[in-house]
Image (cartoon, rainbow, N blue to C red):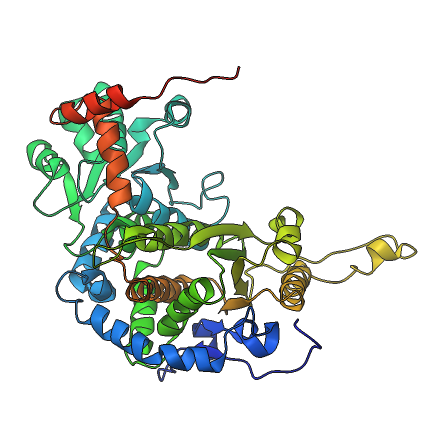
Length: 486
């Protein structure tokens, strides 16, 4: 902490109380250790800096929310009752039919599925599945060893494959689909294989939609105005979750509760406005381009991966909305407590002052695990006797936060009373809206990804896709001479 430790008024946000709710239903954002009176004015945010951003934040909120019925329809995903019923109906039809559900997708078509499963299923679901619940595998790469090992160890005839691509043209997903379709046809025939494939894609456009119509696969729609990294609360994330027994209705209710809280402007009352402003100030005013998500919850660890794409792909841009070159954007870093206390915290506490931290903090674990020591004469072991792992886990988390704060490293906490569908839904919506607002602060389009598209085009050219011949020729001409060292 900058100077001597002292009590400060905690700056935090919590959801309003519906009549049937309790404090255990709500996540909170505790921002105390981001402030200048705690970590010092060089690294912390002052009340004056926040107040100066209030008008910009209010305009950003108005700008984003005005687009919710046009091109930002992900803002209305918590209220898709008809779609939800279709998903739940399909999941009920498949119950007990499959041992495995495999998601074929990448990026926004995979990371949300992984995060939801990691948070809301058993950590050992794919090893020891609950009765009647299939294992979930998200094959989010085309590494031949990943795909080949899955083929070697699992039976496609006992598997439902969910093919996920908004555009339908993603090379990685298409290649996976073609591989597993062939395996299914070989085992079950042209007709029989169709019940083992369900497609999530655009309603009308793209090659996957054409394949659905041609082969008669069951399909779900990624709505217009829902980009990949904002799609986890659409069928992209809800379908696989429903198939493995996750409470998808609770997810949407949690997201709707956060939408209600964030509907009103006010940088000190709206957590999405505040978090967006903090990110902008940390990079622009405090010279901290690295945003670390530090998950003190095994269940929440994969949300750091999900958020990394959301932040990097939305804000990392060469050009602003006005066309001027900016080369801007924060760099997301993921860490897991307590694991990374022993691999990264040394850098975080004593390294360069180029980082700020968001800790995921869990107040209530699902399990009570007691430590018993048979060594009363050995203090190094006996002080743990009769204590619970949850106590040790909290002490480790609090110790890291103390070390960061005393070293002048700004940090905040997202406090989860417990990890369930309702709290996870709140977190997802909060971060999606906050990142959308960041785009307004940074002056970039938070909803495109030209850098990603450039890589896709190069890959198409290198694979010989028709229409990309000129790009392939250009790549071959400009290839630098090889300088291999070994």
